[in-house]
Length: 89
Image (cartoon, rainbow, N blue to C red; front, side, top):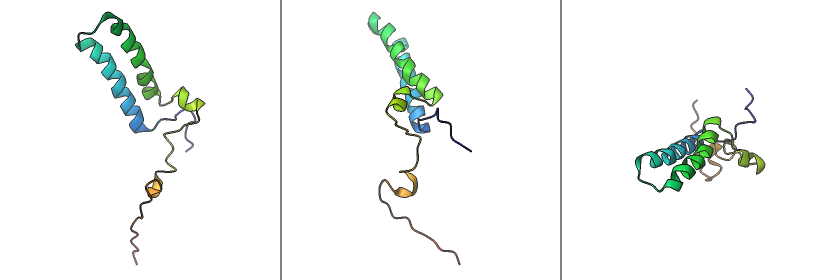
């Protein structure tokens, strides 16, 4: 199955963005903040929430970044970890 070119965020990053965005929104609702924060923080929170829900970040696309790619992470290549191999006879 071919991966969609419109998804460039890893699922962990998507979850982190959604939690961060909702945290900004709820911080305005439950904390006494100045009036200008009541407008600014929810507007700022829209971006991480929306990119997290869609799985696509336009700035990542412009910079050709794809955190969904697992080429480097597979087989411990990033940390240069040797894996134990078990040969079953």
